Image 1 (cartoon, helix red, strand yellow):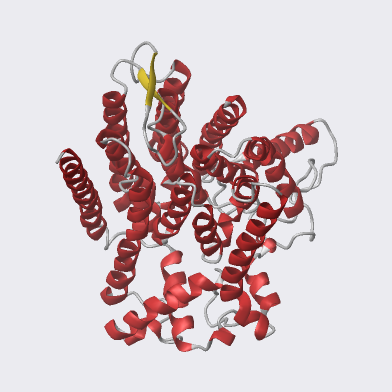
Image 2 (cartoon, rainbow, N blue to C red):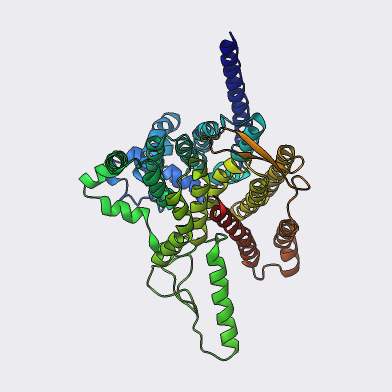
Length: 528
């Protein structure tokens, strides 16, 4: 009888958890529907064109078509995802998938359809979050759901600007959930699928490789080698399913060229807040000083955001940066994490390690988009509830990363939306973390596997959830940067130095992201 009661109670709790999670998703979906008429970036037409390409042309022409400048440059699985969606788009409005007549098509049918597909694809994120939080207590679950499902960054990037990041990050979270459970083969499978959906997630591949090699392929030479073959065969099968048809058609070189267009330049049009912002500004500062001292410093003919690699250096003084240099810097930054994963591959650390890998890729990678900060902010939301210090770090990082996306929505009618989203997120996070750590108490969790809690001790810190004075001053500075760029600069300088507000946002947010990288690196280095 006792066991039956416990079982019944467990089923009821599980049902209540799922119902609450669905409530979070549906509330978010309602807000997303209200955003349907808002600004759409060129990414909206990019994905509409991919619907047309994959629906109107045979597979052999997908990576050759140039009807639109927005050519297909995602891996084959995402192309098949677009092809799947195109079947329904054709039923709703055939013009959506017409290769010629559909160019820059903006009828309500295409707007509602494409925005609706993003909301539905967020079910993948919902499932990933559910798997990672189902064994946590109710308060921690809701905090993570607030951070991930109600992420203001996802609202801005996916549901206004337009992309499918929630869907892709959901695949990542599903992979991490299996790794935390010790089901490494499934974790590796979903990560391989993710790479065949969007190759930019490959930054975490070294972490996955080292972790799986040491955790899954252990148990002696014979057993380890057998497992290595199993894992390698599974990954090879996934990549064969994705890229095999293009090998058969003799088009793999064309596909690779589309996936890795290194000629786009070191930085994106709006500089992502990373290390290269400081490198660029240092070069410009040195060039200015040397010219004033009488040195003949030539003005570069190439730009940081376009041009072919090797044409000429966009730097006046500092050495040219190539894709190989950025690749080596990412690997160097990753090395402490890889050493930890090699020495002691703990399942409960894998989410941290993967988030750190994406932070390294964001800071030191080639042609990084500001939207890529989602790759590490969402996974860090999963671990933000573990300790008070994690919560403080995530609180600062999520605000800085969200603010760095503000330039994506540059039209006046979207300004209240992005400000309200960030303010609401900040209030909810502060309230949630204050409730989780009311007296500065944090629960140390034993390494018992997939987020299964086991209270070991209670450690106290004074003051509850209160961020340090440096963090407070930094956030106040964020407000000052916004007031200057949005109000004072146009009032005092008009159209002069029009690039300055964006540059200031990029530089200031880069300081916050660098702080987060150092914090994560220190945490990983000090972890037992």
